[in-house]
Each structure stands twice: as structure tokens, then as C-alpha cells.
Image 1 (cartoon, rainbow, N blue to C red):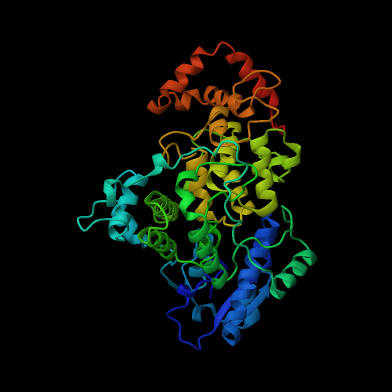
Image 2 (tube, rainbow, N blue to C red):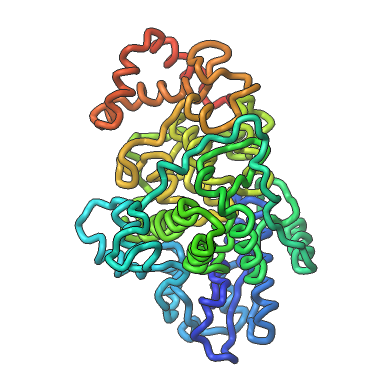
Length: 487
């Protein structure tokens, strides 16, 4: 049996050539949460394309639930073999059904191996990343030290967007040509009752087959990888993709193995086609951060998702949840919500420093926010968003993923994006009609969480600055009055 995020060839390599493969479309999986329209389309398209590729070997069942699919197909679950699913709930279900469960695939390290490496140490990404580079023999010398003497080019990969440019000037990213399967998926989604979707319908943006995923990988390496490193943290309102790979989507569907993505980037560097800092950036994102998020999802335990170290309990307002970008005046936040509304995707800085930063400053409930990210993004799954949102973006774990909250005001957004020019708000103003809601929100966040955060040595300077604000009282009152309204 294959789940809808286990669709690549590496999930079926050990099967007999004639062995049947069960693929299930569960209406219940969409009915119990409000997912993005394009995510629902992508998942169904990918699943149906895989069934078509398997031909007579595929047992493709459409049912209300996975359990009903087994009954409908007359399959005893105890005869089913499945690769370990990617969520706690799905893993419990597979084991409760008595299925034979194989170790997880689509990652570079077994979970037991990670636990053995982690031991009792404090989780530190850089330590893990160096361990990964050595064990995978990536960009290291025979003595295990990094090529050119540097492990990490992150400090060099923080260029602001080029001045005076609306885009990076790169070719438009590869996109698929929809086929008859996509047409049927679209008609089915239009006809579904009892399922509420968010976002807009649009031509499919991301790969849904192995062949499409390989084409997307090749396109990235040829056309955008060279610029990925330097500009990976920059944001331009008219360039939604920038130099990013967009490969998190096919990787998280299981269509690409992470090592083949990294190997392709390293091969381009070896050929002299891209700088080392760009190849290293891909390695850091894929076998570093992506693997880190996956491994910690399991290592930290299911209860980690309930973390709420800052006592954040504000409900997500409807304009945010519904992706009502047109109701927002703040340029960066309006653009970020429009990105999600229009294609169910934005790159990591928009996620962390605009959407995540806003949710952190406004005290949105961590579990609800993680669920919003999971359901609104086409590459979103529990294992992706629990660690990235609860830990990284919202600091709800009290510092297990990050040493300080990723809160930032308008100065950061003005430096790394082109949104502030022409915005209704001024990034340098914190009180008044033109006060930037991120700048004001940053100081209000520090004020509200002073008891929990003042002892953090990395926040000593910001708290000293807060104490010197002559308009602190007016600022806090202003942001309290803003409430849940769209800025």
C-alpha cells in the first residue's frame, strides 16, 4: 500500500514485478480539514497518475476512509505491507490494522540512527549538518573537513534583492502541462459535497509524476541554482519563485529522493556551472534542515505539537485563515497571503519572516497555526509544519529549535524585500496612522512576553531598547486596539 506522499520508485523497489499496489483516495482526509484547492488537486493528480503508471498492478480505490477502502476492496489489512507513514496518526492506524510496516523512506537517515546520534545532547542543527556532510561524503575532503575550509556559506547567502529590479531576471520556473487526469480531478473537486476548500483553482504549478519531478529538478539546476545561494533570503513582490528550487513539493510527495537533488547540485558545482555557495545551500536545506525537521518530529515526541511556551492563544482571524489578501493594506503581508491563495506556496523567508512572524507577534495559537500552514501549503504535512511552525516560527517550544524567537520589525523587511516602498505604512514608524504593524508588533511582542523572554541573553539588546522607548505605553495600547483586524 502506498500513501499519497510515497509515490516515487524508491517506495516500490523491493516489490515483486507482479505484486499489486493499493492506492486509496480518502474523502474523509479532505473533509476533516479545510485544505487548499490546489493541494487537493495535486494530491489526487499525483495519486491517479501513479495508479495509471502501475497499470494492472494498481488497486485504486475511492472511499470515504482508508478502512472503508480495505473493506471495499476485500483486502485483509494483515496481508498488507506499507512503508512507515509520515504522521503519528497514520502510523498508529497501520499498526493497529496489523499491517507489515517497513522503515520510512524518502529521507537520508533512519530514525534509530538519528536517535543514537542525538543521545542526550541538545539538538543543534549545525552539529547535525556537519555529521550529515561527513556520513554522506558531501563536499568534504578525505579527512572529513569541508572543501575550501568552510562548512557553511549561510552568512554569504543573505543578499537583499537587487536594487531597481522587479525580478531576478531568471527564466520562469518549469511548469507541467495538465492532461486528462487533471481534467477529471478538477471536475471531481467541483462536484464534491461535504468538503470545504480554501484558495483559488488554477493550472497545476508543481510536478505530480516522477517524469515531471525530474524535469523540474533539471530546470532548477540549469536556470536558477547559480543564483539560489546568494538570494535565498531575498523577496521581490513580482518574483514569487526567485531562484528557489520549488522541489519541496515533489520531494514531499516522494517523487524525488533528497539525495538525488543534492547530488545534482553538487554535480553542477563540480562541472563549474554554479558556485560552491549555491551547491552548499542546497545541501544545507535538504540533508540539513529538511532532514532535521523530519527527525525531530519523531525524536521530540507527539506531545511536542502541543507546546505553547509563550501562552499564545489568540484564534486565527478569518481574513488570515481564508487567505483574504485583498483585505490587507500592509504590502508584505498582503503579498504573502496572495502567494498562498494563488498557488499554495511561498518560499521559506516569506513563510518565516512574514507569515510566521505575524502569527508570532499576534500570539496566534501554535497548534492552530501549524495546522493552517499544513493545510494551506501544497508541500505541507504534519512532520513539516510541527517543527517548522511550533518550534522555529512561533518559539512555542521554549527554545528547543531556535535560541531566540524569529520576531522582526519593519527594518528587516525593508532590507530583505521590496515591499516597503509604496506601502501604506512606514517601516521606521511605530506609533500613528502610518505605523508599520510589524515594527509596532515587534515591540508589543517583546512587551507582552517580557516575563518569559527577558532572561534570554540574545534578547538583552532588544529589551534594553524597549526600556528606552518613550512611546512604549502608546505603542502597546495601539497594538491592543488593533486586535484581530487586518492591518
